[in-house]
Length: 57
Image (cartoon, rainbow, N blue to C red; front, side, top):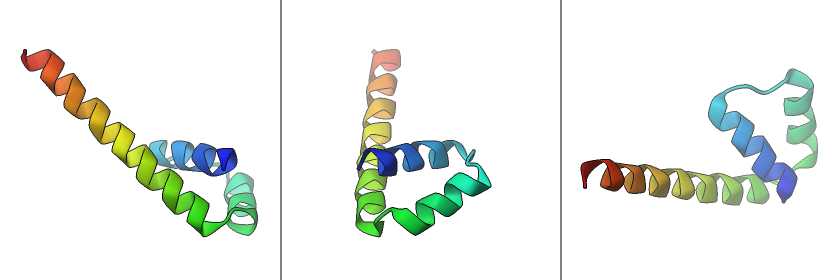
């Protein structure tokens, strides 16, 4: 599961080596990548909301 989180993290930034992408597509389970992506998106949105609340208060 950690490798899926790592792959999603680097994908958010748009920097992923070709060989790493190939390895990910061959070895990671799609369900792990989807779960890691949804959790990462939720954390990112939560952090943005908290930042806006902090700045506007």
